[in-house]
Length: 145
Image (cartoon, rainbow, N blue to C red; front, side, top):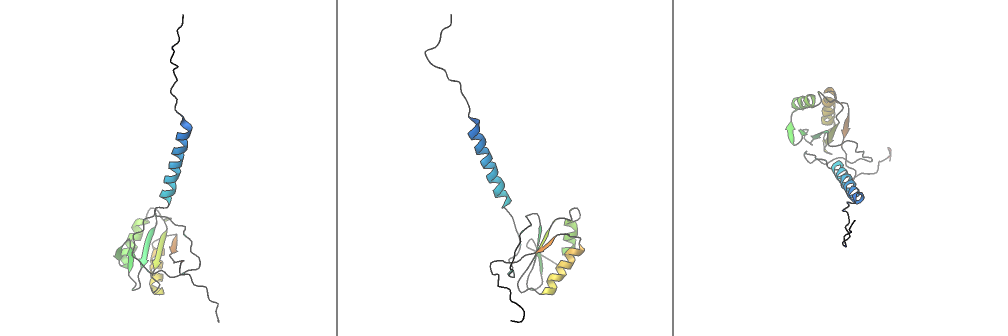
């Protein structure tokens, strides 16, 4: 003979679908936040304006800044041109596809920028880009006006 209890026993259940939804939401949030985290340690330069700015590089690049006196800075360290070449060859010895971003002050001489670009190319770097400031972008003037 089987006796039943007057107290109805419920089996414990864990609802997993809301838990999975929350985990996916947190995962997506952390992924989006981590993609937008870039750490740039460089000196402040007054960038020249440009009509189009394309940001295709991430945080795993080398930032080189050229100030208006022609000094070269890498991650807040002032370097001479031979020291810059040594840094470039050491960093890009195993990975020549890593991008280099060169930023120059608006008053930097063209020759100083070309010298740095030439040095970067001589070190074997394949991807080089220049920084520009899009907020102060003037309208391009037509020649002869």
